[in-house]
Image 1 (cartoon, helix red, strand yellow):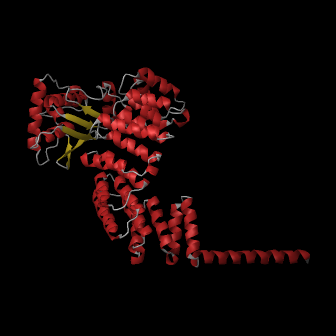
Image 2 (cartoon, one colour; image 1 turned 120 degrees about the horizontal axis):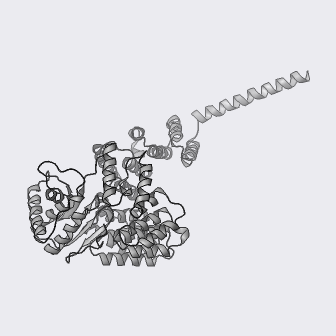
Image 3 (tube, one colour; image 1 turned 180 degrees about the vertical axis):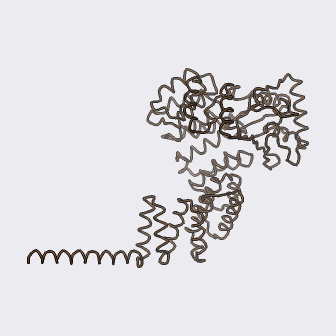
Length: 500
């Protein structure tokens, strides 16, 4: 009897537990308060369980307020669920659309979500701008969100356009984005904005390492007057009480970009060992790769305890035989990584052959230059631009001047077979930076200073030609390529000292 009584008790207890569990489950799925829903969604978001966050919101959407809707939109951003975010946006009431937090998240959503095409990107950009227009009291948070979206979609000029419309003082987040945009555009307008922001920056932000690192990077990428920009950047660095890894690395990288290789090494040596990491090591090795500092670069390389792929890549110009074996192992399962190759002729041949094997097209050279406030993009060998006839005619005149002054076109810099009716001269003269230089010279007013930005590294022939052009035409030329800022002077020299 005792056994039966105990069994009945246990049975009733189990039934009671299941009934309570069912009630709890029913409550959790149908009658949770908005506060409980928010708490659960926040826990899931903090745990980076974005799919569960969105699924839970989907189940509870009938009971959700703007707080939960905002979290659901953020989950869509993290998941890159463009359509789900669109579906939420379509159901929002006017009150929700006027909520500043939801407005900021919508801006972030349209700026950061996966974009399938350029057309969609432009449509979303217009939509984001329309959302901005509806916001009457734009906060720093709203502006920061919008600016970050524009810069992440490679629209630095639009960042500066939006800044011109701002009627509030920029905070830390906004200043960092603005400095980044100014460094990318680097035209007269961007330089004026960047320097003005530095001059007017509040004292409490002048000790912020992250902002100062952005400012250093911006100044060192300005090509207006190399010496002044470098001095300004060094002044900012010296004002920082306790430089961190980011600040040191920004300064080392900036020295490298301006081919101030000894300064880059000296600063790296002054950097505390516990701050040295992969990024700082790669930056100093890249700086050394364009100079004759062989002893320093070998010393630094051997001091690095953990030699990562990126560090080995930066070292490859100095260890060609060893690097070739490493590249062969790497490319058995990966596409060729062009940064792993030096300018050594044999390395270039290996790179091209491997790219042919995997069917990868060589990237087209693009250059940008600003004339009369207009930024113009020129593509190598392209004749579709409205003033192409004038540009190519001027390029031919420049070529005649170069030959007259002893320039010999170097065919080793042509990385493909010549097509019918092509010559070494015609191919090299049609490189994008050469067309950009010619474009500057067909303007009504003769330029005294030319600025060009290029997506690839300048080839050796173009580098030699540009030095000569600067001397013949008596014009200072700055070319920012993928790895360096070249300052070509009227005396026929370049700041990189011919270390391409």
